[in-house]
Length: 426
Ligand SMILES: Cc1ncc(COP(=O)(O)O)c(C=O)c1O
Image (cartoon, rainbow, N blue to C red; front, side):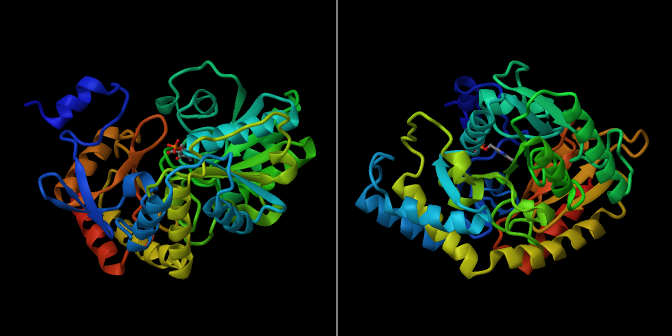
């Protein structure tokens, strides 16, 4: 009998990346822990790519899903759908976007597709600004605004994309500048770029880049960008697929670290809101959302079961102030990780906020990115009973630590210890 790994390799695409030399089959989870098919228990500090946002097997979500599934699983957007309307109402209010409309999809990719469709239709332009080192999804349009070669398999695109500086502090021409000088330089670059281009539809940006290795600009940079974009009529789309719902601790949305110039025109979300059920979506001002002059549906978007999960999950998150927990426990965790990394030459930077912590590794002699070291730490952490993630730009040399937002202090301490051993093992 072939192993599940061999069967996976034989039947699924080669480009479907798997973690670990010996990949893990996760069979069940509870709270912040998961178990593999051999019965080994792991502390989960990646949550299936920041998607198990509150906790594994959260009883409130499981119950809501089971009850809704027992009533009706599917009806489509052709019929009124109470849980969809209720979740849209809550998200519209939470979004901070005035006169907000919400459209549900089944993934972050499809949410960004929708935002790009809206922006290009509204502005009658297919020119998009995106950040270098960004990731916005796997579809044809979204890989066309993904400024990370490792995740963008084609240069062909329905969009004309120009990549802007501003999200990466540790490399590139603006590396080493103070926050103020960095922002000034990035704004000057944007001004210059817009002076040379035709009508531009929108800027799409992640407040903290996820796949890019949890890198972010100085607070306020997107507000400074916004003032320039406004002068040119260019829309701002905040991709909150990883940063939404309080993950960054200080804010409910990532854009709020840049709120001096008001909310974005659109925000996109996915991952954590369904705690694993497939929910994505876009929030936009009504004027933008309603600019399409043809019908549209989403067969699965807003399906009653996923919406029931989203409502239960969001209710739990707000009732238990998981944003506050992300701030408090995340603050402790980043301190512990910094202390753990202090004596390790290969660590170039520990960064992040809330429960979104990146550890960038580089060769201490050459300063070059060290993807092998990142893989070695990932393996060592797994051997120690801790699951974390990887990310980064030109090379995958950043470790990503992003536990469910209900993480306890004891679990944070335990995970930091395992991480310290793993870092010291390289
Ligand atoms: C910032 C960001 N946008 C969009 C996506 C795409 O979401 P999905 O994988 O649900 O299509 C991701 C996925 O990692 C993401 O991190």
